[in-house]
Image 1 (cartoon, rainbow, N blue to C red):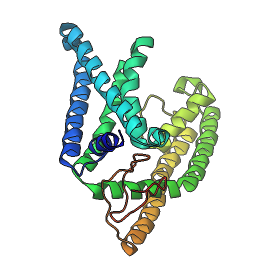
Image 2: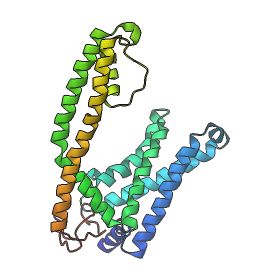
Image 3: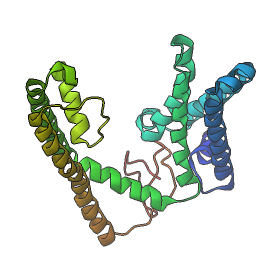
Image 4: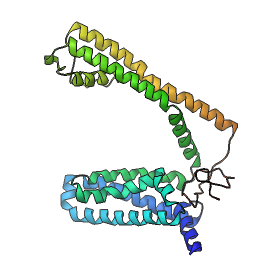
Length: 272
């Protein structure tokens, strides 16, 4: 029983063996085909002509993905660890929309989220360098989150004040009919999107708008700088300690991205 469980774990979670790579390649093709099916189903002409076929294909994909998800939970020693991981949540979200569609009509298009599962291609093709880079970006965003939250809070306060000011300066005919609508205009202007559905008509309003447009360019650059600094620090730490990573997944929690010489899982401490 234990041998068969280890064998299933090797096939489902590992990409270093022929069987494991064949399983992951077949899974990737299923993901791509299921996403193409969702896209094709959204075309009215095709949906009306092949509606029954689309339904059969969708339930076939859902059955296979559900079986795969259950097997992943069964072969790991700590299923809850895998269920809470990034890929565990993505695998769950890949099958939920079909069942939700039975209760909430019109939600079937959410199945397009399955395309996130294509991220497994990095492990299948052993592009572990991309995984390492993704980890660095994730760490940089996590390290910058407090600064970004403070920055966004300041921007939110700024657009609230300027939006309220525009509500006082402009009239309802210009589109500034309420403070929330004026704040919406301020957000659109500061982010330099500029839909043009609302525009100031008075000289004072146009002066404020001009200042906000110029300020918007500086605001956009701040988050990039915050994350960029953390990325540079992460790259410096990585260059000081350059250790290759492997595609081996932990038999307990199912997470990968460990160092090639790792003897224990860095997430749950289980013996590799």
